[in-house]
Length: 114
Length: 115
Image 1 (spheres, rainbow over the protein chains, first blue to last red):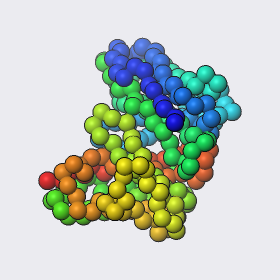
Image 2 (cartoon, rainbow over the protein chains, first blue to last red):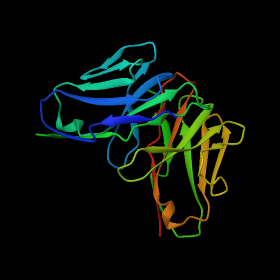
Image 3 (cartoon, rainbow over the protein chains, first blue to last red):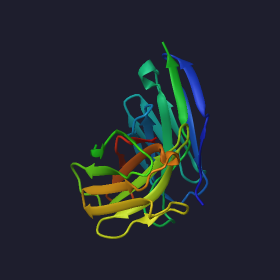
């Protein structure tokens, strides 16, 4: 059964710092991996989608990498800002399970202080 | 990206009543929609997978008679919490995607409080 783990569970950094969020998954048979942002009491905003054949994706100050064989992904946030404070969720789309639902990690709660 | 609209964003209801939550894909046709439940400081737990025109597939431990899911069109799925109890209070989120390797889009979520 696919399991997704995110480390650390929480992270506090000063504004301007570069940071890395980690995601690992137990089964490398995935279609893709997606990173989301969730603000308190809100839904999920898709940040980046990496297909299984890709190594990385970039959007603005965000860069996500994928090493499918080792079951790892990282989300790199450059020059962090207070507005980046939120919970970041990693999710995979498994190949060998019925349906196409995503399997989520528990998230990393990021706090950026000004 | 595509937009998934979920309504209402919050609802308070009395124990024993039923509540309906709607999930619409506004600018694309979603053959499959998903319903998740999220407890405070926890991750999203899949409740059921909803395919247009067919019965929903429920995850183990989810009562299908309590959480009724209808996917009558390619743009609308509904979740009805029947005979709600305080333990049903939670954050419910819907999601839609077109295929296996496409991006998943989420609604804004519904905060249900049963008193």
